[in-house]
Image 1: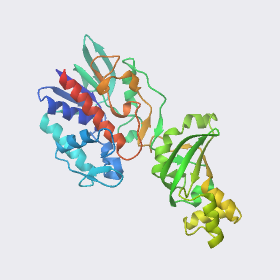
Image 2: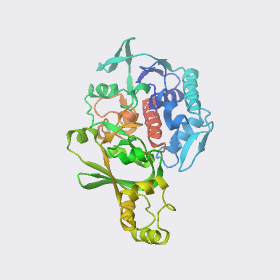
Image 3: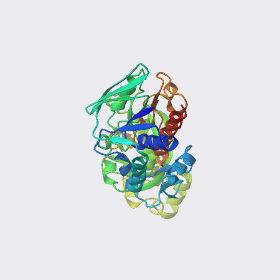
Image 4: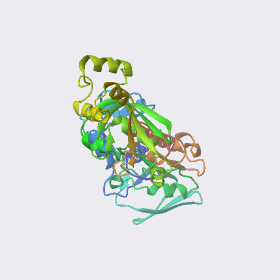
Length: 368
């Protein structure tokens, strides 16, 4: 019995290693279209690799899996877990070393053109020949950061087996604004509550650090809310979108006014640059400035796009998959990781899902 995995990223390599751990006699081949596997892992967590989160559903599984490879984890606030070395390279090294020791065949610079299933066997057509397998795992990733491997090619492969793909958009990505105030405030950070207002309705809200940039806004709170922004709808004029910012969620508007009346400014609460911008907008009116602090509107014109996104929103619906990410439409087919419509917030949750979905598929395949 043999298995072919298309995609040598987090979910694909985790799946390959786990299969061989479970059953060393199974033949496992990974087809990776880049010149090396795990390239995207190098860039995660700013090169440190936020591998999982203590609050993630699959934390225990991820932790145990990497401990079996000799990787020690450490926590770095808010449940975020990193390799003890604080180097993403450590994650890549232990995974690829395990592949070599266990006998996983990784074929790099291999481009898949077509897939099919005939007579109970999968045929994978590539520029390096035709591969056949009893089980096929699609682990190609989505469309985020195509230079690191996720070029969106996996969606067509899933569709070839009858699967659908939901609307796709960049997620965990920075947001663009037409406001000149963002350029003025470039580099200013604030812990605040941000709401996304689309066509007059509040559709999402989150709290966290906001960073002003030349093009708009960034920071964890922005990244988490970005999945609610549709570039397609904004470009067509179907949506009008604002970010509504409460810079001091721990104080009421009335408390802010009292503070202003006592001290004549908000420099003791907010960054000076932000105070200057707000007071200029309100002509120095303390009460009006307090209102703006609690309810500052910023026009959102779109996201920074897939090249800057950490993940892709959308993919193969989970309703088309059984337990362990096995296809309901094609026996022996598994669709894992970012290729599925299953996204999470920042903090290691998405990478945890990538590893866990690959491991779950491996356990199911090994049980047949």
